[in-house]
Length: 94
Image 1: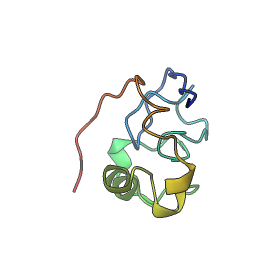
Image 2 (image 1 turned 180 degrees about the vertical axis):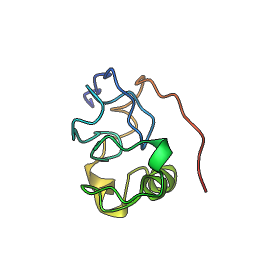
Image 3 (image 1 turned 60 degrees about the horizontal axis):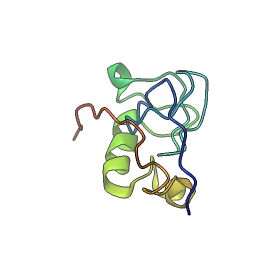
Image 4 (image 1 turned 135 degrees about the horizontal axis):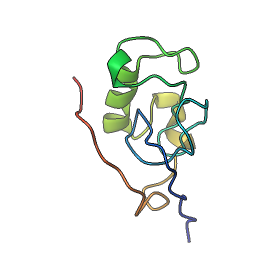
């Protein structure tokens, strides 16, 4: 059986799951593998230093691949592990 993720108190800016303990603490989201540097939807097209891509691109990747980028696909939590984890999906960006 897959161990489920514990819900955090902060929403990941990339995948929109409540998977982080705090925002902007450089924590890596186990759902999408975005490193939270504090960037949010107001800076979608700025390249994130630790992630080396824009948040817009990472959000698109998550919708398409299930991870912030292709290199992280094997590192993210399975759908079973994130089952029941709260997600409040914000607008999807093209």
